[in-house]
Length: 173
Image (tube, rainbow, N blue to C red):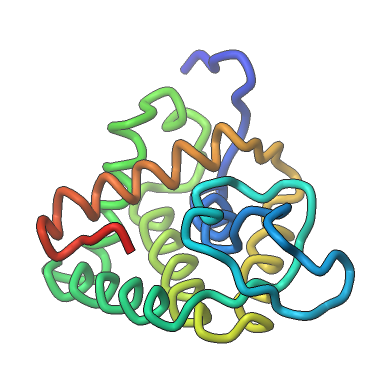
């Protein structure tokens, strides 16, 4: 259970990482401090926002596609628990060293992933609600050092899982 340099306890890092991905790239055309939702391009979502925390207005076609893929993913699993286990396994297959950082039982953590990601996906159409979801998960991680590289690990693990599970149904949107 040796930690690699730059790693620490990450009980909720998975949800926060996906949240940051959905939140978008902090510097891409934001109305800093204005409290207004900012329309954001899909390409900007590839960068992790770590300098600001603004509402983001995702394009409706992206929201619809993400929600559809999430529902297909959930329906393809035998249960929500199984879907959560898939996410858990995908994360630790891509970064086995992170597993030792989790103190919560696997089944509980899998359901936390599901609840966090479901909340994000459900709120994508509403910038204010999305921000509250991200903010809530962020507060749950205040005791942890959430880093951009960890966010990227989680995001990429989810994207890779969806790519593998959804096949051609998983599009660049």
